[in-house]
Length: 368
Length: 222
Image: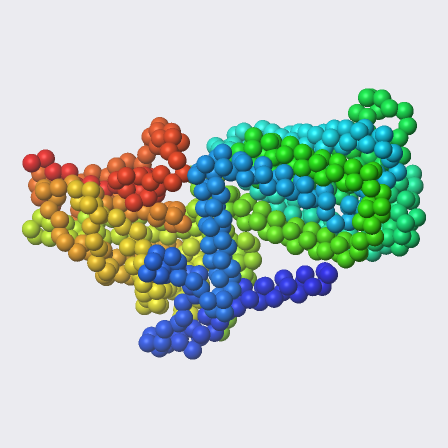
């Protein structure tokens, strides 16, 4: 891995150094004869030539890969920021609604996502019919708490950034930049978790860990082999299993003496870890300057998650046969697909965040 | 032959190229400029002379490898190829010069007498940008701005009397260069911009950059 990175860096240096080095060898024979024109490196030009329509003439990749990449980045950022501005400028309300709708759909489908449905149903199968109402209530509470946690976390982060940068001319610009930087970080984090999921034979939480989440995971791990002895090994919960559903209270915890305080503590334990989707949508909304829409979207996402989890729970409770059938699905393939999605999605998010971040740095610094 | 200095500069260039180079709206080249308003014998404005002195970083980068005969001096002839390529692309940007007469944007011809000089550690590009139609400043308001709307190049008038008159300016006329905007004026502009939508454009100017450029005017009291 390190070797590969080194090779890439080396290739980059060679590519980057090539044009000036070539220009140098070109000029050497020209010494003494004024007629021969040395080739001028395009990077030396004050401005790059333009096409008829006013766009900057593209540098061919082979002529200068570095300049080519710079041009691509510039063009890409231009389009992206124009789209963002349009979203915000055309109608903030439309942008807000779109964000909320997408978040809701994300919540619904993410909770039903591959790899997780089984664990959810496994847990609910243990729950008796009479306890469905309570389980649904706890799911609802944990979904809401999870949204609140994400909002509190992102708000606190942005507040810190704002107070640190209070001497800067434009706090809003700084916040925008920070949002995009954090989005890039989130993308990198997703890739990292995807990679660690790829590592096989990762043990479930070892005994001795006392967090609620670890206990819940432990319960799932113990339960699954009864149905399909090999399934437990395929299905590994990463450090962030997503929103609500993965941290669904284990059936053993739902049972027993019911008290509101106990329900609260359960929901809190489940919801205390904010979900990546909610954080992303909050950061993105802040970048757009529509933070309130981000907050609304976080709740919309929680609603979506809650609905799906409740439906799955109800199905599990009222039709154990159907649930058992669903459990036999080809989970290994789905898990692989989920990891692939996470890697690709994480990379795309990191890339977008980085582009937006670099671009926003430029635009906020211009006036300073 | 590759000199040690050349190697060092190449390595630095490679380093610079490796760091992400987000090309956006902040200056990459700084120019201290002087201009002449050129009059003909009939008292008409026919051209602008532009003299641009580049910042040291750009100069270092641009000059690298151009000392063709290796004598340690950058002769004007050695700089010619760079000048020619620069002028070719600057044409696409109308030499960053906007001339208005009674608010009407004036057509500019291809620049002439362009050349670069390297002396006292400073690289300077000079050229003359002609007006297609000569203008009589007693018959209308003449205004010239030199600026980069994208802020890729920061153009600033520098020194005392950065703008001069060449030729026969009619007697009732005088040259006025608007001073660099004060903080209060900039704040005013900022406040004005804050009330506008994201797609707002100045009505009397091409673009945003024009709001911050220093206009050169010829004012005649007759």
